[in-house]
Length: 108
Image (cartoon, rainbow, N blue to C red; front, side, top):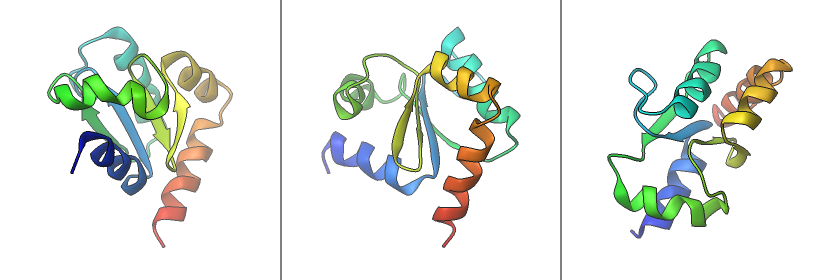
């Protein structure tokens, strides 16, 4: 399976996934840290991919969603954005609702 297919499977098989530098518990950059914290504050489980441990994903994810930077957050198979956009959605109270809807939809 090539890397773009692998990314596509990760995005489509996880209701919420963050591609980040490091892990939610041990982020390796401030943007990834703030974004993962926003996801954690919703109380909803999410998946993550540490792009520093997977150079193929690190090099090719920007092509997948046409988004050049990390982190990248996907909800229900769609890129919602990076740090600033995710924090903005969270501050408006919409992030938890989006994540709940994606989890509920994928539970069936």
